[in-house]
Length: 142
Image (cartoon, rainbow, N blue to C red; front, side, top):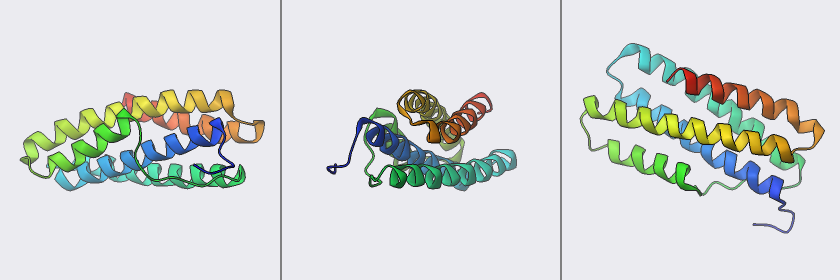
């Protein structure tokens, strides 16, 4: 936490942490996937979440804040634990566990982006609405 932190910057950092968790989950799904379609969609989603990370970092810097990378919040921590646990599971079990974790993170991102849109200055709303649409689309196609 820095002196420039506002509720908006804190919420942006929370979304950033969820996006980092989503990247980790989709990368793990890609590695463990025994189905080509899951692996291919995980690559696309990993790329899109990387883009979202960059957009969130830009928004944080524009508000004179600093990005934080420590996972905080239940959804981010649950996703991080799931990724670590699946390393010791057979692939048949990994995919469903990571699928549920991905779904939870996407739903948490939807809630976070809706909250951010309420706090955001007008200049950031279009970016946040785009990120919200992406999270909603991903949650429908898990």
